[in-house]
Picture 1 (cartoon, rainbow, N blue to C red):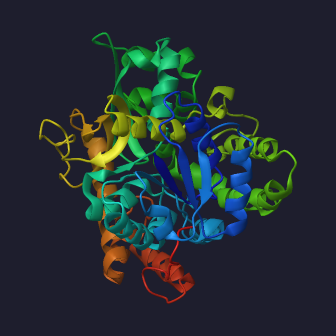
Picture 2: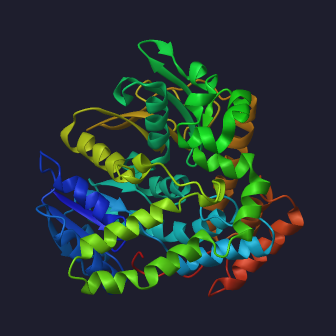
Length: 451
C-alpha cells in the first residue's frame, strides 16, 4: 500500500515512519514524500533511512505525482512556513492579545492562509485518488478538516493527539489501564473536555477530581489546578488554558524573549542543513525533538518546571494516525478520539445534538473500513456550550472568508472570537494581517504545492 505524506519535510515525519516500520502487518510498503522545500525533504529522507527497515521512501515531483495511485494521504502542510507562524503570533502580541498559532487571532490568520491550499489538495485527491482516505494533521485541524470534507465528504478525518494524551494521563492518574477506560470527551479541536472516565460501568473521574494528590501527578491537573477542575467538574483539553487563563497566558508569552514560533524558527534554522550532512542524522533529530517537545505550552508552566518524561517519549499523533489508517484499511475496529463530521454516527443521530450535522467535532469514534462513526455524547452544559458555540461561529465565518474572499466574513471571525475583547481591536487585527498578505486580500496568495 502507498502512503503519501504532504508536508513530507516536516519535523515530525520520522515519528510517522517509525510507527510504520514497527507495524507487524507491514500495511505500507511505499511512503511518498512531498514538500516544496527540497532541502527539508532530503534531510528528513536521510533521517528515515537511519530508522532501520521500513517502507521504501520516494520523494515526489509535484502534487499530482504524489497523489496518483495512493491509498492514504497524510496532509501535514504549513502554508507560509515557520516565518508565517512567527508573523501570526507576533502581530497579535504587538496588539496586546494572545499570539498562538491555533488559538485566537493567530489561528484565524493561519486558517485564512491555509484553507484555500487545503481545498485545492482535496480537489486533486478527488480527481486523482477518489478512493483514498485523507488524514488531516494540518492546523487549525477542525477548520481544515471541514474545508476538505466539503470536497471529499467523510473520507477526510482530522487527527489531533491532545485528547488521546489527556485520556492516557488521566488513566494513569486513576491507576487504570487506558484500554479499560471509556472516555466521555466532547468538543471542537483544541476546545474540548473530558467529562467522564468510565471503567466497568463506573465513572472514576469524580474521585480523581476530589484527589488533589492524584491531580498533581499529571499535566492537566497541574495546569488547571484542583480548584478550577472541581468548579468545572471535568478536565479540559490543555488548549483551554488559553481561555481559562487568557490574561496570564498572554502576559507570559509577551514577557518571553521569543514567541513559540520564533523558538522553533531558531531551532530549525541550522537543523535541516545539519540533518542533510550529519553522519548520524537520526541522533541529531532525536535531540532536536526532545528540545522541541520540552518547550510545548511552556507559558503555562513555572519557569523551573519540565514536562513529564512519559509525555516526551513519543506515541502521540503518529500513533493516532496509524491506528486510524489500520482500522480503515483492514476493517478491524478501533476506538479513537477524532475530528469527524457530527452527523456521521452509525445511529443517524448527531454525536453532539446541540451542533449542526456538518460541524466537525472532536469525539470518541469507532473506525473500521466503513469509515468513522462517532459515538453520541452527553449534551454540553451551559458553560461548555457557550464556548463551543462562540468558536463554532468563528470557524464558520473563517471558512466562509477563505472560500469567498469576503472581508466581512473575516472581520466577523475576529470580532466574535472570545479572546478578542474589542470590535475596534478586531478591525485592527484584520487590517494588520491583510497588510502582510501579498495581494492585501482576505486570503493570502498561495503556492501550488504544500509546505
